[in-house]
Image (cartoon, rainbow, N blue to C red; front, side, top):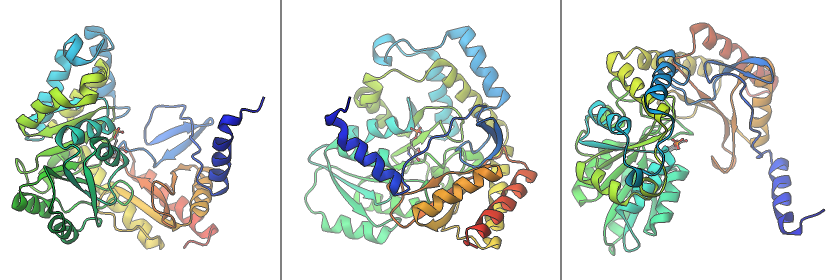
Length: 393
Ligand SMILES: Cc1ncc(COP(=O)(O)O)c(C=O)c1O
């Protein structure tokens, strides 16, 4: 029977399909790794944010299994109600030390870390200066806070200065930016933003989801990359990308972290990360502290692939990191490109509006330390074939 209440949703779904903007979500039948199985076929994987190949690493798997045997699976309730498990405290202490921050708090995801942090720092009489290309979770955190949000031009300290000067009525103020912009792979000029924040006495927050485990010495993140220890008030991160697991973190000033334990709503009203997730993340920290090998491999893989793509004639935008966008323009072309890559044995997703602006659709190629040299050469071969068949190069 036709349900009239949802007719508009059917129309919207049809419209998305016609515009080439409908998300087709593939089922992965294997662990997340350099190669994955989809529909029974082994495919080279360039989709995942599994930068360091941790998602299926034997050491993380073993740590998770051991933790289950010792401490069970779940935390039982939110931490303020059922008590916090020692494994969560251990992870927070280890992350703070790794990142050379005063303190750290973990959340269920990077998304909830942003939803917790922004409304805890600013409210309806306050002002947020937010980079125009910030991630959806920052945008939602800003909305939840009810503060006035003023967008400044992407990665433009000049425009930020202008916007600050124009804003004369405010209570508290917060500057917020992605660290690495996930769709273009460019890095925020955090050193300059930090100077502006200090000059004006404004809180500074960076969401380093794609810099965590990637930027800085041995993957210590964007604050380490710019050597700004102690000067950035809030550094949000995720444990779902380079760390290969799931979870979010906020590292920074002790007082702010104490405040988030009292006022971060996803901390207060939602259960913590599971035990095996947390233990696997501790093992990831162990590995990063022992050696920079995986981080080094990630960067050399990324340099090789990016250069290869450019030599083939692809436009890789202005990426400065292992995120390599292959700029294609219209969404249907990007979708067809992705489909043909899949046919040739390579999994890389097309990204279109609303994730990126209209007319800026692309294939986003995500590098990983898990890729071998042979994998990278194969990828370039496949991209060349599809690029030529679609007249892109
Ligand atoms: C900049 C940024 N912040 C936050 C998130 C959310 O992280 P998580 O997957 O841990 O929720 C992402 C993930 O795509 C991101 O790119």
